[in-house]
Image 1 (cartoon, one colour):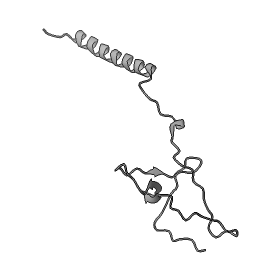
Image 2: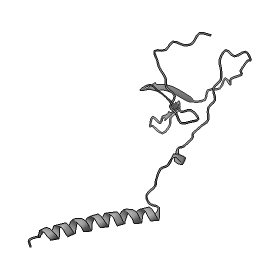
Image 3: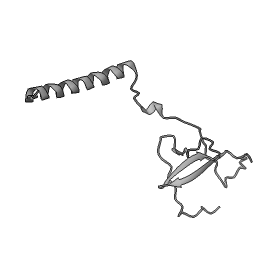
Length: 111
């Protein structure tokens, strides 16, 4: 059986229509998840403790079981005790979702 040029065009159009209909139906039934800015997970809130201020700031002696590290100029945070076997890390951002930058070359500020 020899396929004509018309048969090939009809098969291509039918395949494209079937694909579009499948995607639309999957989306309508909720099987396709759309990620938005509301889906960003806030794992934990942090605050900045100013060092060298006039008043004395008390800090707990217990460890937070988190460690920060610098990767490609950005500050990342991960748990110290990671039982999952994967190195799960998160990017540390401010209240406006701007990444916190870090540098290993800068000296510590003088107190």
